[in-house]
Structures are given as structure tokens and as C-alpha cells.
Image 1: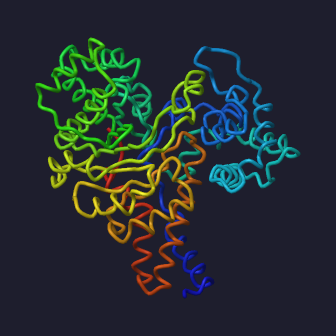
Image 2: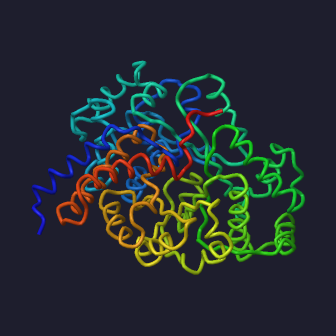
Image 3: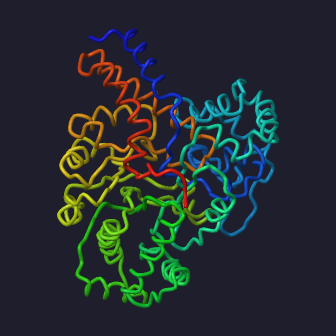
Length: 465
């Protein structure tokens, strides 16, 4: 049995290899306006609580509605606006976060980003709030200054083809050295079940200068918008579908389905077929224009309908569901899985699929890579289980490194640090079992933290246009 003291010492040595490497953040949801405008953050509550659905979700589970945490309502109704009241509410209920990654990330953010060592509690709420608020008034804590201090080499945000990309254009025009790129996320013009689908498609057509009244025009608009994204540095697309299903329709059948959608005549089954078919279309586009495809299937989006009705999308109402990959991905893989021009990074919320389906698939098709554990799985324990379950069949080099996938800008360095510690611990265990020499473990450590995500997401090219 490995000596636990030796394993710990080796883990510290391996962690030191990656600790100060630059951060590659190839997928996330930070608002680009944050860095384009570079205005001081408003207050600790609106920075660290209001937009963090990990935090608001836990409090909702204990009967504290998002209204009391300042989360805006869809109907414009009243919500708590006093940031200190919101902060005190979190501090009073801090015990709810014991053992959770949310507590780990927040405490690490308090300490390593803001230099606040005082533990948060009901009694220290104002002290911690005032200390962070004071930091936020300093020039060193404006967004661009923090970007540089965090050691971010590249940060990818996520935008729809209905976005005019003005914030990214401003970042480029400013000549700031920080590399902020976008990710092409077409879900709102692909998902026929969205109430605003037709409006979004029309908006995309306007931006692309294409008539989207036909399926051919719709595809041309998507291609044009992809080129607009590529022009401001985009290297990947992202697709968040309920399932992993892929379908290869004929052009005629796809056109008929699209026409029915424009006339509001489709069913949920039609919507699922169209989503699955568009994955094949996007794969073909990626082969042509080089964008890396990211697939995020398996979330039952906005499962809490009351939460969605009150506050809209992306406020913590998603629930994982079982996901079939072997059969669902077969049409995609049969058509393009062996094509060296295609690169697909696949994520899951179904942890049971890692060893049974995903690792063998990534080990069997050159086009497939495994994305980091995501949403409910981006925790220290789940990241460790990920390495233990996928390495046997997929190794390290069919995985794509760590992806923070966060809206919480100040948590980015903390999340990467946690991932690096987990990988260091796992690699150390291999060394103590005589399964991997230390020098190879050190090389692997640097690859997982930095070189792999940079290569797989095609971020080797320095700078943006």
C-alpha cells in the first residue's frame, strides 16, 4: 500500500510544477462587457452572490427565494436591492454550504483574491463585506487588472449568433493585451422548443445579411456568423442539447422540417430530430472552418418551472439526466469520427457514462476528446473520480484539460487551482504505486494544466485579430 505521507509530498511537488503556469480558460460565461468596459465592480453581493447559481440554488433548496438574493425577475417585480442585506443573508446561512465546492471556491476567493482571512459567519458578515468592498475600490481590483494578476493567457466567453459582438470588437479596438475571445453558441437558433426561436433566427439573418426564410438561407446565415466569430478570435463552438442524439437527415427532409418550424407546426419529437440533425451540420461546418465542437448534453434545462417562470433561464434550475452516448453519437461518428479535421470535446452530467461509454469512445475515435467534469461534477471528489474512471481506457491525452465553465470571474483562478491540486494528487498516487515515473508525472501535470487545453482548443496562435 502506498505511503500516504510520501504520496502527499509527491503531490506537493507535482502541484508546484503547474501552480504558476498561465491559465487557459477555453469555455465559460463571463460577460465580455466586464472587461470591455473595465469599470469597478459594484459591491461584494452583486459580484459574488447574485450571479452565482451554485449559491442561489442551495439557498433556494432551504426556502430562501432568489428574490431575497437580488436575482432579477422576468416580470420586473421587486427583489432585494440592498447588497449588505443580501450578504448578511448568505452569512447567516453559511452553514448550508459545509462540504460543498461553493464554500471552497468562495473561501479561496476571499483569501487568495481579496486577501481576507476572516472566516465568514453571521457575526463577521459586515467585517468580511467591508474588507472586500474596500478592495473593490482599488484600481488593482478592476477587471483588466485582475485578469492580468490571475495569469489568464486566454479567456473564452460565450455568445449567440444573435450577438453583434460589439464588446469583443471594443476589446480589440482598445489594443489591450489581454486575450479575450468568444465561443459560438447557437442553441437559441437551433432549439425549436424555445418560444423565441423564430425571433432569434430572424435576428441572426439580419446580422448575417442572409434571408433565413429557407433552410439553405438559414445554413448560410450560420456559416456567415461563424466567420464573424472567427474574425474576432473564436476557436470553438458550443452546443448544449438535452440529449446526445445525432441524426443525419437528407437535405430535403431537413428543409421540410425547417419550413414547418417557421410556420409553428412542429412537435417536441421534431425539435429533438432537428437538434440532432444540426449537430451533423455543425460538424460539417467545423470540418470546413476549423472550429472545435463542444457538446454539453444531458441537462434537463430549467426543470424547476416555477423558478424559470419567475427568473428566466440559467438561474440554477437544471437537473442532470441519464444520457446515451454509444448509440446517440453513432450517426456523427460514422460520418465524421475518423476525420482528422474534426475535433469534438464531449462533456457529460451522467457520471456513470464515463467508464462505460465515454472513455472507450474517446479511445476509439480520433475526433473525440473528453471534456472536464461539468456543472454538478466540477468538484474535487468528482474530478478525482473522473481521472480514476477514464484513464484506463482513454489515457490522459484524450482529455481536454480543465474547463471552468463559470460566470463568476473572480473564481476562475480558484477553480483552476483546485483542478491542479486534484490532478497532482492523482498523479502522485500513480507514482507511489510504481505505475508512472516521477518525471513523466511532472510532464503530464504540465500538459493537463496548460498544454493540452491550449492545443486541443486551438489556442496556440498568440493574440487576436
